[in-house]
Image (tube, rainbow, N blue to C red; front, side, top):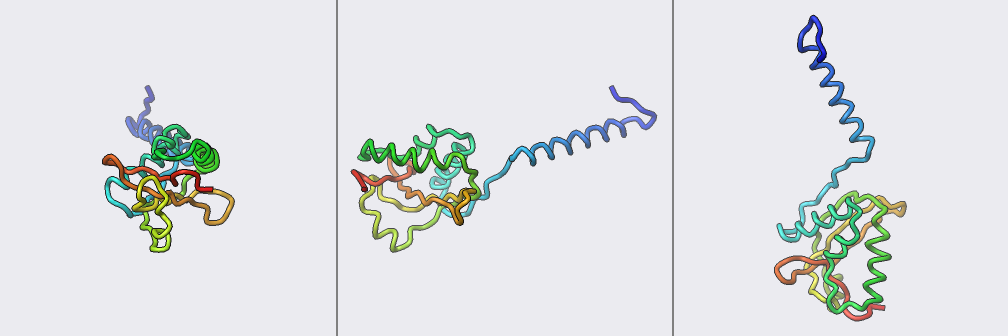
Length: 154
């Protein structure tokens, strides 16, 4: 136990230094909080939060489980996992939000396995400027999923 003629002031000083060191270590170790936009309802935001948590844990399997794979070819599924989900795991998410489909985008959403209602918008810290993804999302069986194009989109 630390003792001094000043009583608990020495202990308080040591505790303050320990707290300061803990904060510095957290900042330098890359602990971050992803800024979230205010779009979407509770259930749509739930998908966003689970996606970001899975990404932060580098859990590819958890990300895959957020996608509705019904009526998606094996080749397209493998391509999406490899070139979208897995490729982005090496990048930190800078921000996430739920955004509306533009009228132009909505006009091209007829080939999906779930009717997209919104986009899950993810901005990554990639070297390319304005690097982000818009994942179409729709509701099925009482929850939101990332929607995929049916059949072979190529």
